[in-house]
Amino acid sequence: MPNCVSNKDFFDYLRLFYQSAVFAGMNTLTAPRKSWPTRQPVAFLILAAIVWLGLYNTLIPASEALVALLPLERDSHMGGALQFFFYDTPKVLLLLTAVVFVMGMVNSYFTPERTRALLAGRSEGVANVMAASLGIVTPFCSCSAVPLFIGFVQAGVPLGVTFSFLISAPMVNEVALTLLFGMFGWKVALLYLGLGLSVAIVAGWIIGRLKMEAHLEDWVRDMPKMSADFEATGMTLGERIEGGFHAVKEIVGKVWPYILVGIALGGLIHGYVPEDFMANFMGRDAWWSVPLAVVMGVPMYTNAAGVIPIVQALLAKGAALGTVLAFMMSVIALSLPEMIILRKVLKVRLIATFVGVVSAGILLVGFVFNAVL
Image (cartoon, rainbow, N blue to C red; front, side, top):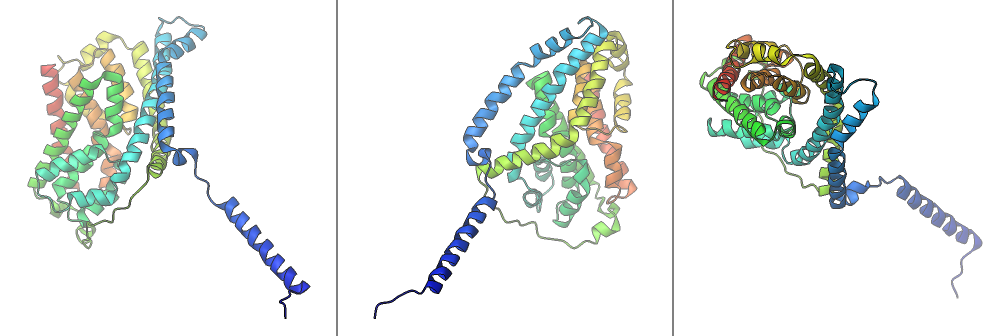
């Protein structure tokens, strides 16, 4: 007897087919569609580099054209200050965006867990060098000092090694080096890199030799130890590009007000401060200029992106390189807000030792380079 399908069965099958098709269509519509940079990462990187270079090469003529549109003389104090602002603002933002994007991709290899694993169980000396070097390529700043410090202590990272990392990460990071390279050239950037690493390595080693673990807060010392092992996860180039976008959003989105303030102050110094004033006040002949620069830098709360435009203007007005570098290092490595944050995990004596050792290193850097250069 031939199989037959009743009208009821036929409509039931039709209804099920329709519901399946609608459900599949809804899944297609609601599924997250990958962005073009994620789907074509190599093409995106090439195009982004071309666009970035094109914009960078237009900065000088664009800044001059903007000043020419204003009802003032280019050679006036205000004209010079505005040209400095119009040129340096997009320049710093372009440099910062590029380096943060690239380092956001690189930093996907250097998570806090991987950093702890690399440093845990290492002997002092070599570990101090490793910690200071890792600080260059890791995206950590003073705002993350406490959780990083706790994580390192729990993983068994020696105290001096932890301090080498905490000094290097904000002071000798990719942002500072890139902006220094873009504004002053590779010699000054390389000089700052060597000085910053030296201060971080030696200061951390000295703190480690002093055996000051007893001056951690009690609750930090009593925390249970944890394994430094981590499970590595593979990422595609597209996912690393997404990491770069996230880094730009997080870092550039937070520091751009400091950049504007720093460039505005730099523009005022550039346009209005007489050169002989800075030469007398922060020149190499004034022995007290280096310690004064360090004392002035500690209460300030900014980062490399905000202080470098000020450094550029000070140098242009005759300030000595050693004095300016000491000022910059103290602002970044010894800021008062960071000390307040670290007070949650360190006792006063250890904080005072940290400040004293790092200050001595910065002072030595300033005096030596004022004497040599």
